[in-house]
Length: 329
Ligand SMILES: [Zn+2]
Image 1 (cartoon, rainbow, N blue to C red):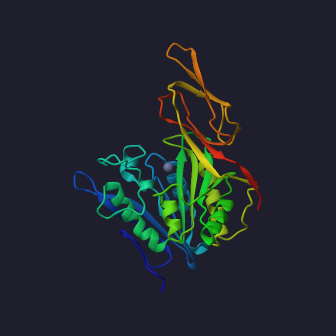
Image 2 (cartoon, helix red, strand yellow):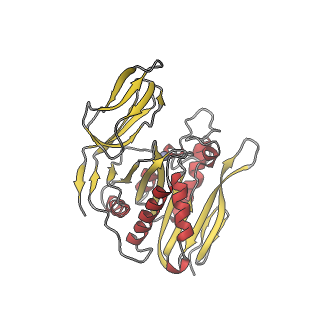
């Protein structure tokens, strides 16, 4: 007898694919807020890989990656179970924005609300409904995000001491994005990643492509193959594990908000190395005159940069991986 996996209306008791919905709250019209769940259960035993996307509602690339993976899985050749929730914050997904639109006085960032509260504000309630089955069933967590532009390709794992960090590092290695942050336990509080890791579940975040439509079929195909490589590394799919080569591991990241606004053109790409003080983009005023250069506040590797063409002060200017250290297998 296989253990029953029950997430909302998706109830899996045998090999095969089961689909359903998990209720995470109510809309203002009283209708349930329901998020999609797919459980693909292999014929052979193995771990439960939990993967989710759109924890930020306009980060659609991860949804496409997860969809492409689950379309390719066959219970006959899968060891263990893939639990996929491709669209976590469906209220924000509907309105094509990052945060929950129905949140009253709170920020509504679902990825700062885990493990959630059953009687808290809406986004806390959503986090609670999602985190209960995650904690119960997941052996690993794979969380898909995007950043600002199409050329974003980096990853992070919860680098807790001991086994949880070591297993996260193995997953990051198998996914193989060159820019990787071993995230210290004191950052990203309330994220699904850090919350799960502290509950003993190795956890990994992918940042692939940009928000809204800023990603391509190639990014989806490449990331899906890397995700399959993670499943091979975990022993869930057959075949040799690809070695994607050396990685840069960062000590942390700097997330910098713009203190100037205007028309903006960036001059660096994701993956570029920058030195503190280096020009990373040019502002123009409304008459077309150059009105200032944006400069890198720290040295490191560009993880994400504002796409332009217009920016107000306070927007995310650049995200830099600090102190890159080349790591080999
Ligand atoms: Zn995100």
